[in-house]
Length: 229
Length: 229
DNA sequence: CGTACCATTGACGACGGTCAAAAAACGTGG
DNA sequence: CCACGTTTTTTGACCGTCGTCAATGGTACG
Image (tube, rainbow over all chains, first blue to last red; front, side):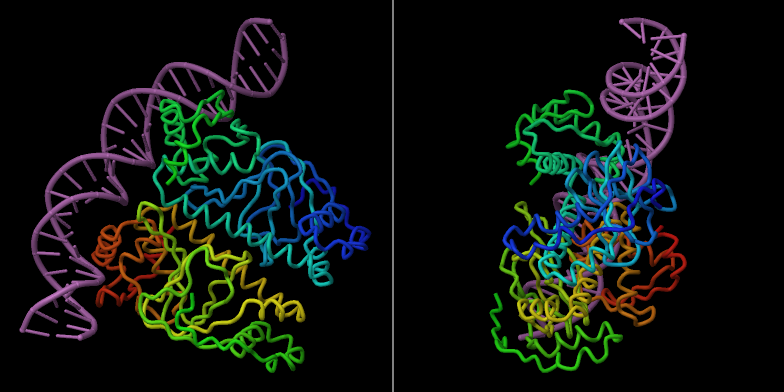
């Protein structure tokens, strides 16, 4: 784990000194703490960030690039647990071990923070604890929404995925997907081929436009939302 | 919400006075707190405990009976988020609103605790906070395992469900299911018919025995685990 | 004993998986 | 800038699993 060992072992409490002064800026407090306590580590495309069942000593935040968490079964099937984009936090576990593995989808910059440091901070500061709690809840909602996707038809799943990505990358109707069709398929519980076919179907129906394989334009969000259910 | 309003609005801190004396009994501390702070409410079969989007003012613990959380879509499809058996805690949200609805599957006794009371306790007592955190993590793992089920074949899903239930009700190989086939189907993203057919298939293969519709005997766990993957 | 509700079984069709091949995109080095 | 090999994506043909519709059988409870 952490093959690119540029982790700064020491960290400073500096940033937390005057945090109690502005408790109303709730989301920026934890964020600031993480930013100061952590070290930036570059990961190149397709390299492992941590493995399933490794001890969860660090918490991670995407600064640039994209990350996938996943699990591989004995028969080779892979399930992707989630995609993490700039600003997203991942690897936040309550247990001692990671339940999924994590890989960089493309060249990425990741902020790495010692878990014990975060937890120590949370014990001292209720505001930080509250924010960690709400972060956990956000992740929970993400996973529950994922479940709701997985019971739907192929078309609904793909559309749901597109709308989710469009929400998370607020770049209008132009989505730049960092992941392959196989990644999307493994996230949605479908095959690569079905994802591809469904996308061309959607393009034929004029709901989207495939500018290139990875660049998708949402042309009719109303239609997409109607499909999603 | 809480139509059967037997909630005791006041609660006592009595139980928390000497909690710091035994920090090593980690799981019993929060449990004790909940037990003392809460009120027992009976819910009859198929009655709503809370609805989706209602404010999450209470946290619940099953004392007897069983509970399902669920979501109903516009087109009538229903997804069951989870089943909760005696000892299980549900309705633990980080947000202000419940994301799922909850119903009693059969006549049940539920311990109901004010959320603010729990949170206040957690702020005063790091041990309680830690336990709430780990409870949240347990729920997270449950939901993630649910995702892993949903990408598999019908047979694998049903077997996965049976093994999960067998683990949670440590009654040997004899499982007494409180829920209907439709409930199981809506949990696994299948139809009632497929669940039924799969169960009879498993019986034909001598992996299980359907003593009655709701009583299932696991005859060959090895075979079941092999199927599950 | 009768009446809902629940579970099982059957016939059939559609959706999505599998296998295979072609086409497009990408990166690398000349 | 182009030629080349590799990876990714698309498309096609076929088949199996599971959903749909419908009827029958079973169980619990008044």
